[in-house]
Amino acid sequence: MTGLYKTLIIGSGAIGASIAYHLSNYNERVLVVDQGFPTEGTSGATQAWVWVHTKQPNFYGEFSMYSAELYQSLKKRLGMEFELDRTGGLSLIFEKSRLKEVESLIAAQQERGIKVELLTRQETLRKEPEVNPNIVGATYSALDGHLNPFRLTRSLIEDATNNGMEFSFYNKVVAVKRNNEMIYEVETEKGTFLAEQVVIAGGPWSKMIGQMLNVNIPIKLVKGQIIVTEPLKPLLNHIVSGVRQTNNGELLIGYSKEEDGFNRNTSFNIVGETARYAQKIVPKLKKVNIVRTFAGIRSMPKDGLPILGEVPSNPGLYVAVTHSGITLAPIVGLLMSELLREGSTSFPLDDYLVSRFKSENELLREDLQ
Ligand SMILES: Cc1cc2nc3c(=O)[nH]c(=O)nc-3n(C[C@H](O)[C@H](O)[C@H](O)COP(=O)(O)OP(=O)(O)OC[C@H]3O[C@@H](n4cnc5c(N)ncnc54)[C@H](O)[C@@H]3O)c2cc1C
Image 1 (cartoon, rainbow, N blue to C red):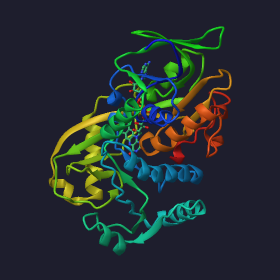
Image 2: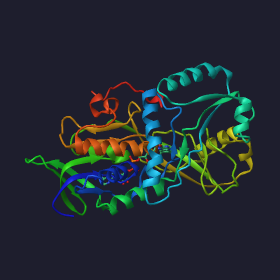
Image 3: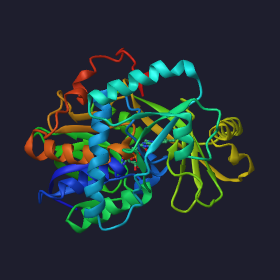
């Protein structure tokens, strides 16, 4: 691992791994450095839905839809099976008063070609007999699905490695600077590496990495707690309002959002609230055992939208930080690799550029998530 790298990626979660995998088409020297093991970050502590249908604003829904489509070809190309299952997704509606809001969501999504339907109570129960019958209906889209994030990340890394990309794990980046020849010097615990381009794909740690270069990456850390049930016989046909059934039969359930720094402890209160809400969605869950809980940290950009592209003040420095990084890994990997190698992208990134943040006081739009 010596000499000059074309690109050095900091972070080997789903986002960094996908960028490395897509860069391996270009036959140039790429190094990915991670302070730990690839799924130690958020990519190993996630619900891992590939989710499209309620994503707002609708241009972001469209971006998510294209990424979900790309998974179909990624599934064929990657060497390892990553349990991608396009089950379709349901969001239950309990109050009649919400129907107007739901109808405008559907109209907005349809403007962008996102297929979402409003199902009646009977139609919902026909699709998903175990959900609470006290619903007024549900939104449904066949575009949604889920996957195994451990296998996805591993398979991206394995294929990237087979194609010549280099990885250095358990190796924290401690400083980054640009020298007089406009080359980045990336100091790590195992030595200093030189690269023409650096990509910050550090998930929740990205803000700290940006600070090494005086670049503000405006993200908030938002913890989510997930409960995992004992394995059950097939119970749900779709992802339903925060509940998904994995291939081995466990249910993963989560809704919570807390700002608590990097603290990944779970708490009795939130686990209890999550379990109670899940019983409202699927009443049968009252009799099901919880076997473990875990928490992950969302890297939530201040306006909720991905932060992608080159940092205007630092040529050669790129950022790829987003929430919903499991859904978006294929499109972010593809477009970032195009940007890094060709200087332009096959789909416009204008809505997601770093330069949209003029100051720390940007309007918050996270309620649109
Ligand atoms: C509870 C919860 C539920 C979620 N559910 C979904 C969902 O259903 N669908 C969806 O699409 N998304 C979901 N997400 C979000 C999704 O999991 C993340 O957006 C995605 O995993 C982010 O991937 P990443 O590669 O950007 O970050 P990470 O996986 O966190 O990877 C960042 C990597 O950078 C490394 N790193 C950091 N600092 C340094 C350093 N100084 N030196 C070297 N390496 C460093 C870390 O070790 C880490 O491996 C959820 C998140 C949470 C918390």
